[in-house]
Image 1 (cartoon, protein in one colour):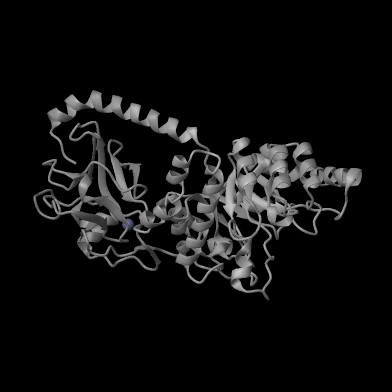
Image 2 (image 1 turned 90 degrees about the horizontal axis):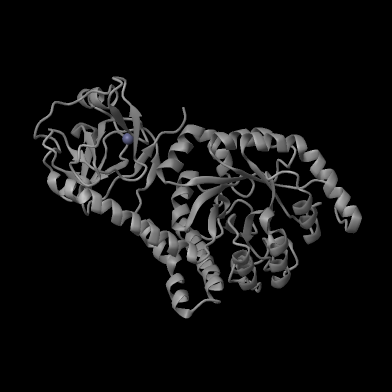
Length: 468
Ligand SMILES: [Zn+2]
């Protein structure tokens, strides 16, 4: 959007006041009703490529991914193949967080390296299991949980140092199996970095009892699995029967459960979950149908939450999951491979921070609606709506596509260089405070660093380079 310099100056004060008001109103609306914070389990898609699962995070209403290793998923191992840097680029590009790494199989006493990896990737949680004698109750159970916590102490030191929370999942045939074992862990935990990953699947299927447990151990819950037992994760039963583990399909009523979460104003993660009978396979036929099934479950949980409120609110919150998946479906696809070949003129600008001569050529005067993508990697950088005439001789934009452009101090020490967040290719420079437009920002971009895709034409997938 383009407005004149004078209009911009005049509008500046008013615009910022109304923006503040709008932000306040929005905040009030958001805090008025309770929302679950969703985390997407990568293994719901079996061994699917992690770069194909990442775009599904937003499509399932989640903001973070939980990386699962083999045998249930393989996305954790894929990070070792891709390289941490490439993985970091991917989650940055999709504006999601690495919310958790599940390492049940490493166990609680072998996750020190994993905690350090988590820290490097900005991940604040690792899920694992308990260790100790099984089948105990009463004072024996209490002292076994005490012993376990004692053995956890050196690991909790690393947890505190790395800012990682270790969440212990309750599991069949484990010290941490019964509701009482969870009560003791919550009561005896010596560190805010030792918490609980609550799996109703492994508990007696009594909704009210699970709700009461949530009220008791609430502040210790870091992850809540929206997951019921159904008929179990058994290979010999049909896929439909296996999916009775999903919220809204099996017989467990999640209404008391999610309303207990609401009552305690639970602010940890919720992971909609099931295990297919055959390990390492997706819970449904295709990526799209897995996402659809998760959204169906999310819709059900939303109904459970809103059923205690007025029907007007219920109607508003119900179809959210499906709506969001359609919107998010328009995001750019990703492929792994080699970047586009550059000719010498392109390479001079993109790889060597060169600047093309100013003038009316290239995209400087282009006004057609569409998207400007990176010449080297196809990443969508700018929308034509954000382009304006600056008369500086280069294409100018007052905003970028979220997450697509990285700013870094220029070697000249004066300006701020802009590079493509995906391939690090040089784009140009960004200037602030010139008051050309309301956003008061000018991305001054070399035409040669970009390619224009007319509105309606297919945007090619963004190329992500694998580690050599
Ligand atoms: Zn690029």
